[in-house]
Image (cartoon, rainbow, N blue to C red; front, side):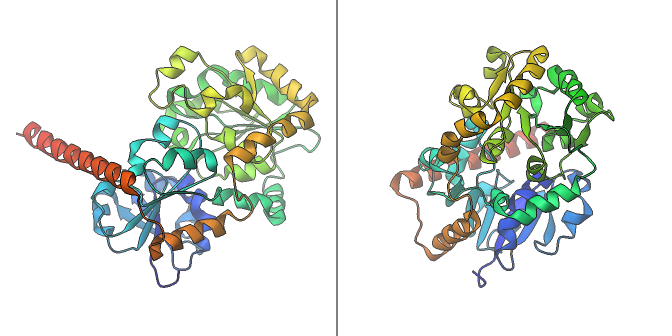
Length: 375
């Protein structure tokens, strides 16, 4: 792969952390930091000066200029002007399982290849584009003993070895449980180590919510902190409708699920009755309907820990393949795309062309609308 130019693209620290291991194994690859507004300030110096994966800051309005500069661009979500790319191959790397209306939306048809975690998303996305189950390359580190030792030493002062550690990982936006449950989470600190890892969008876009968790009773972590490291030092995970649920299942950490009103949940465009975190909720974790019930949920898991971990292994196998060699599988698939062994089939080509045309028409409409409003 040395003779090919490979780039990864993203706009927030989570996206860099997610691809770091994979990108570090592809010689010469870079991370294009799509400069949106002032989010550059949200990246640590450690990321911006990373030696394994060089970071190139690029103005979002000039993204189209990258078409043809790289043989392949790997993205996790849509980036500006993606539908206009003609020369560079587009690989979409799955970044999570939650919120299926977005994750399995028609925008995936713009990919030349979708790299996904397991058979479940492979079946869904193969409607739109060539798809390969390759596991989650980020989670390959979970099978490295040194990774766990480093995580333990890094957070040695954040936990008391005599207590179980509970990690709260809520989603963001209207689906988040923070407003309703944060008091109950804080209450757990009387008998457990409590860590709070906010969704990166909460950290970057929802400043008002940060004020609700300013306390010295828990340890708070944000967008630049590595959730996998925090999972390593934790025993139990609390979440709501976040993709963190599935990371916890992969890492064999029992999950407490904080429920919200189902009618309100389904009003959100990000989730529907097909979404795993709604449709198969009882399989994923122990459900809690009210803040006052949270402590009982934690106690139940504490008392039935081994049974609950064993119970989730079936769904783990369904959702994740190639866990220990995912990076190798990703690189193999990208090589197959470059060599021409992976191409769209007839129906994928039809859908791709239609989606691309719709995006271009929408862009022309927005330009025209902006022009008229400017008069």
